Picture 1: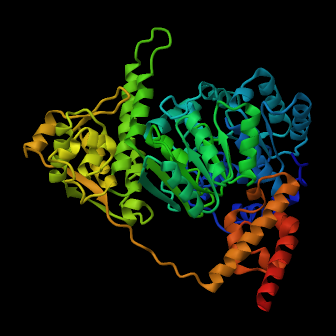
Picture 2: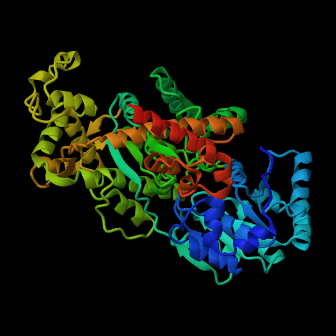
Picture 3: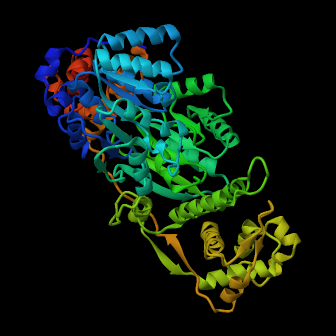
Length: 624
C-alpha cells in the first residue's frame, strides 16, 4: 500500500463547498450520473437514504463525495475485502485520505491506521461488518465520535441484510445496533439489485427513518446480451470468440473441474488465462485475482465465487460457458462487464446438458441431519432454473426479460441484444416435429438426440448402418435442415413437454402422451429459430485507426505507471478517459485538464507524461 497523499485541508472544504466543484476537483468529472446528485444532497443534509443502482451506476461516489464535504469520518461497511483495497487505492490516487481495517491488516498496522483516524487524517474508513460490531471496535468508534465525529454510515451490498436476497449474511442483521448507538448519524444503504420485498426488509432491518429512496433503472445500455447454442466442442467456439474480442474478460463455469479444463485449453491456445475457484488456496486465488486486476493476464476463468469483490471497471466481456442457476445471479455476474460505461459483451452458452446438471444439483439439496429432500428449497431452485431457461429460449428483447424479473417495465427493442438485432419469430414446425418423433419411435426409443438427428440427416456412420437404421422410412428425410436446427427442435420438444428424456445418465429420448398428439395431428408445434445474421459493414477511417493506435500507446503508458506504483491500471485512468485522450489528442496541460476523469491531483501527477506521449505521437504522424 502506497503512503497516504497530502491531506484534504480546511481551505479545500471552504473553496469546494458545492458538490459539482468537488466532483471536478477530486474526481475530474463535469457532471453527475443519474440519481447521484439527489442522494449526495440527502446525505449532506443528514437524511437516511436507500440507493438501488446497477453495477457501474456510480454508487460509491454517493458516499465518497459527501465524506469530503462533511466534517468527521465516513464509515463504509462492506463484506468484500478486495473491493475495500481497490477503492482505497483509487481514493488515495485522487489525493483523498482513505484506509481500511479488515482481517488482512496486522495488529501494528491497525494501531497506526487507528491513530491516523483519530488525528483527522482519514476521511473514509472501510470496514467489514464482522469487525465493526466487536466490543473493541465499538469502543474505538465511541472515541472517534467524541474526538472527530462520525459523519455518515454507508452500508454497501445492503441486500445482504435480507434473507430474501441472493446473498444473505446473518451479521448484517445486527447492524441496526449502530443506528441505536449513534441515532443522529445518517445511514446510507446501497445495493445493485433488490426486489420490492428485499427493499422493505433493508429499510426495516437497518432502521432507516424517512429515507430518500432512489431506485435507478436496472438497464445497462452499454452491455450487449446474446445467447448461443452450446455445441459439443464449444471450447473451440470459445477460443474463436476470445480471438475476435479485445480486452479483459471473465469466463464463468459451474464446476471447479470445468474451470481448470477451460483454463488449460485457453492457455494451450495462447490466451493468457488463470483459474479462480474454492479449490485453490487463498494465496493462489489472491495472486490470480491481483494479476487479472493489474492486466498481467487477460482472462479469468471462474466459478460464481469470483468477481463480487473486484472493482475492475474495464472488463470487456463476460462469457457464461455453463448455464447460470438463476436470473439474479446471471444479472450480477454478467454485470461485471463494462462498469466503466464503455461497450462490453455478455455471452451465454446454452445446452440441455447444463439443465440436467443443475437439476442434479437441485436434487442434492437435502437436510444434512436427516438426508430428507429440502422440498421447499428444491421447488424455488427449479422455478429459478425455469426462468433461466425461459430467458435463454425467449424470442423477445433480452432486457425485457431481465428487467421484468426486477419489476421494471421495458418497452423492448433495445437494439443491443441478439434478439433485437437478429429478430426471431415463431415458426410452425409441426411436420418437422412429426418426422423427429416418428424417427424416435422407429428407433424403438433407445437412442439420444445426436443419434436421431444423424438418422434424419442420412448419416453413413458405422453404428447406424450396423443397426440397419439406414433402411428406416425416416432415414435421410431431414437433409433439408442443419443438425443445429434439428437440435433446436429437439430441445424445444423437451422444454414444451412434447417429448421426454431419461435422466439416468444415458439421455435416451422417450415419447409421451403429448408426443402422440403431435404424431396424430392433434397438436401444432411452434419453435423459434434465429433469422440469418445481418452483416454490418463498418467503414474504418484513417482518423479512427489513428485514434486506436494512440489508445494502445496510452494503455501501455498507463500499465507502466501502474506497475511502478503497484496499483491496477484503471486506478491511474479509466479506459473512457484514455479514449477521449486518443480522440481529442490534447497537447498542452490546459487541454489535458479538460478530459473527463482528470482531476487536479491526477493532472499534476500524470499530466506531463501523458501530454508528452500524445505530443510525440502527433509529431510522428505528421511526418508520415
